[in-house]
Image 1 (spheres, rainbow, N blue to C red):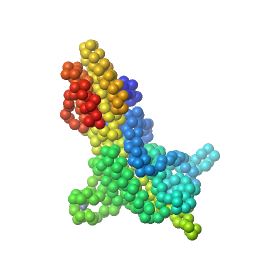
Image 2: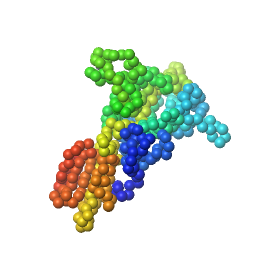
Image 3: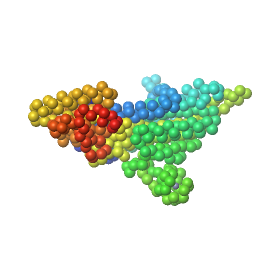
Image 4: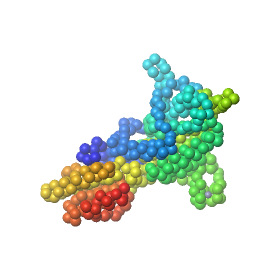
Length: 420
Ligand SMILES: [Zn+2]
C-alpha cells in the first residue's frame, strides 16, 4: 500500500475525551473514527489489525476442527423470554420493536440463538459433542462506554459454544477451549492469564476470565508473587496467602480479554436441548460458551505495548509488517534516485508476499515521516535516503528497539527474511 493513497485521518493533537493511551493512539494514528460515545468506525489501518487478529483466532479454531457459522444480530424477543434473560439481562440488553410491533432484541450474546438451533438439531448421542464458533456483532446499551475500543456499545466478538452429553464431556471441551485460547493469546502477543471467576450474568457454574495485567485496566486480579497463581478478587477476597504455595498475594489492575463459562444445563433446560439414549431416556445437554472481544483485544495490545512516540505492534498483528520510507531530498536528481530505488524495493516486497506500507509522499520532512512511522507503530522500518544510498544501503530499524542497522541493498531481501 502506498501511503499517498492510504485512506486515513491522522490527528495532530490528542482529543480531549481520550484518557486511555490506546484510545489516544488509535485516534491520532488514524486507525479509528469516532461517531459518538462507544461507536466507532475501523478505518483501513485499524481494519487491517482487526483482520489479522481475526485470522489468528480463526486459524487456531480451524486447526482444532471447530466449524464456523454466523447467527443473526436480530433475535426474536421470544427466545430471550424462554431463558428469562429478557427481564434479567439488565438495561444493557437492547430491546426494539418492528413496524408491526414484534418485539426483538439486538444480540448482546448468542446463547439463546445457538440453543434454539441445537434444540432442533440434537437428537441422539451421535450428534455430540460439538463446538461451533462465529465472529459476529454484539450490541450493548452501555451506561458508560469508554476507553475508545475498550468498552463499546457495538463490537465484534469471537464467540464459541460447546455441547456435550455429560459433565465430564463439558470439562473436556472447556479444557480444550482454554488450551486454544492460550495459543491464540500467545500468537496475538497478549500475555493473558486464565483467572478463576464467578459466573455472573451467564448463570453458569464455573468460569475463567483471561486477564492481561495493565496499570490502566479497570478490573483487578489477585496474583501470587511466588508461583503466579491468579484469581478474581471476588473469589480471592480476604485471602492473604496463596492457596497453592502459601506465597504473598498482591492485587494488580488488569483488562479482561476473554471469558469462558461452563453453562451446564441452564440453557438446555430452558430451551429443551436433550439427547435420547438407547432406552429412550432423555438427558439434558451440557453447554459452555467462550468469547474474545476483538476490538478490546486490539486496544489492550496498545495499552501494554507503546512508548511516548506511539504504538509498538507485535509482528503478527501490525497493520503491515514493513514500513518503507523514502526520505525526500532538495536535490531533484537525488530524490529521483531515492524514488526509483524505493519503488523497486516496494514492488519486490509485494511480489515476495510481504505486506508493506510505502511512504512515497513528497514534500514531507524526514522528521514528519519518522514521527508518523513511530505513531503508527509498524514493526519494521526501512529507510531509503540520500545518506543510505551513498553506501548502496537501506537503514533498518525495529520499532521496539533503538538500534539502527545499515544493510547493503543486495543483501536486503535475505536479511529482511530473518526478521519476519
Ligand atoms: Zn503461589
